[in-house]
View 1 (cartoon, rainbow, N blue to C red):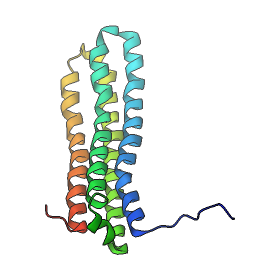
View 2 (cartoon, helix red, strand yellow; view 1 turned 135 degrees about the vertical axis):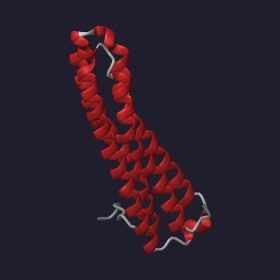
View 3 (tube, rainbow, N blue to C red; view 1 turned 45 degrees about the vertical axis):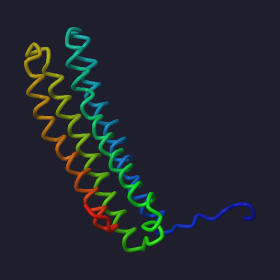
Amino acid sequence: MSGVAALQITPLWLASAGVALGIIGGLVGSSIGIAKAAGAGLSVLAEDPSSFKWVLLLSSLPMTQTFYGFIFTLLGFTSIVGASNIAAAMTWGKAAGIFVIGFGVMFAELYSAIYQGAVCMSGIVELPKTKGRVATPTMILASYIELFGILGMVFGYLLLVTVVGLPI
């Protein structure tokens, strides 16, 4: 095994992996949510090409969870890695706490994006029948699910800075 470095897991590594989970949940969830909505959109566009602007708008709504995951990850990395005194004082307990918080944010972003895609898909399917009148109510209903992605990011970051010991 000469020449192969062994992976050494440190508290800072575990905390960083936890913070990275936020963006992973956003990326995977947004991909699935957009695929659901866009798949339905293709069928609708074959029937009614004039619905393109609504299909485009509703299909892109699940993408916002990727931004929330990115914001959590960026703020988390600057909180734990940016300050050398915090990185040096990272304990296994704090690292495990940060990892669990990142796991929670990952699930908030993942599931809110998937289910927002499902709501948007249902609205897109009804566009031709309603001549586009269902688009605004679909956006309003999808925004309820959006709130869980926002709350996941905000609560996750507030918990993270509490665990790290930074002032809020």
